[in-house]
Amino acid sequence: MKKLSLSFLLLTTGMAAYAQTYNAGSVMQQRGTLYSTSINDATENGFYSILYQNEHISSLLTFNPGGSTGAFQMEAMYWGQLRFRNRVDNDVNARTAWRDIWHSGNFTPGNYLSAIPNVDINDAAGAARFIFSHGASAPSTTYIRGYGDRPVVFRKGDNTDVVIIGGTGNVGIGAEPHATHKLAVAGSLIATKIKVSNQPWADFVFAKNYELPCIAEVEAYIKAHQHLPGIPSEAEVQEQGIDVGDMNARLLQKIEEQMLYIIQLKKEIDELKLKVK
Image (cartoon, rainbow, N blue to C red; front, side):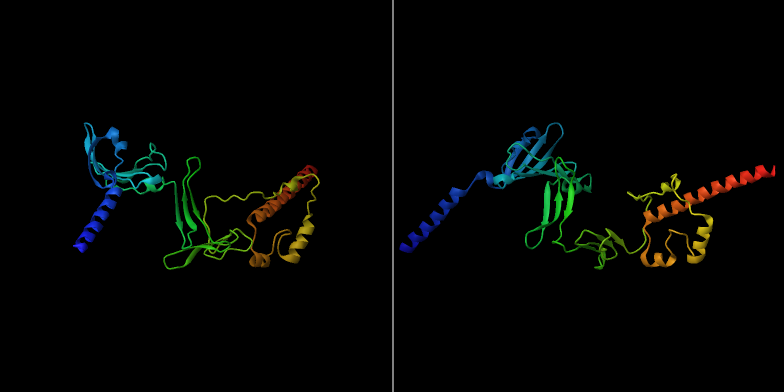
């Protein structure tokens, strides 16, 4: 008899404890029908029928975990649209816009992934390494965060390095990042336009105080070195490469000097023509 009484006491105590924590609003159950104008009132856990007057009835799932996270709602429309939204943290009356998961036979994750305020993918230590940031006043940004001065590497499926961002921020494409140059590329580049800025130009050739080398001096230099003055030799280019902006300025200098030589020759030819006449 004592054993039976003890068992009954434990059972009733357990039931009493459960009764104290039970909340009908937190249990998933059928919640009935609401008009679409009252959909914000569907805050208890469960399933609702939402009546769009003179249109259709949709099915709504509300999951409300409580606390500051807010209620999550998913609605299935009769034409095949599946969408969701959630309440903004700590604001009973504020909710995010509806975001489509499926619409018109198409899976549309971009409609809601781009609208998520902030999503971080953390490493084993809990530090955020891949960050989607979306701000109301600033453009959305995706961040990849490395470890101190260690490189960030993008690899192909066969584990081959494609892009390496070095610890200094210098980048290598198919190559190791260069120690001093911002970009190193192992291979050719193709572009519709390349602009080199902050490059000194060669208009000083047309200044009144510019001393144009005489043709005899240029001829002697070419015979001695087999290249124009001020232009690197083939051996130098093979060893060091060329600076595109600097080389264009040097070539322009030679073109402008040639123009001055042509003007001089024209004047001499005109004088000779006058003498012949």
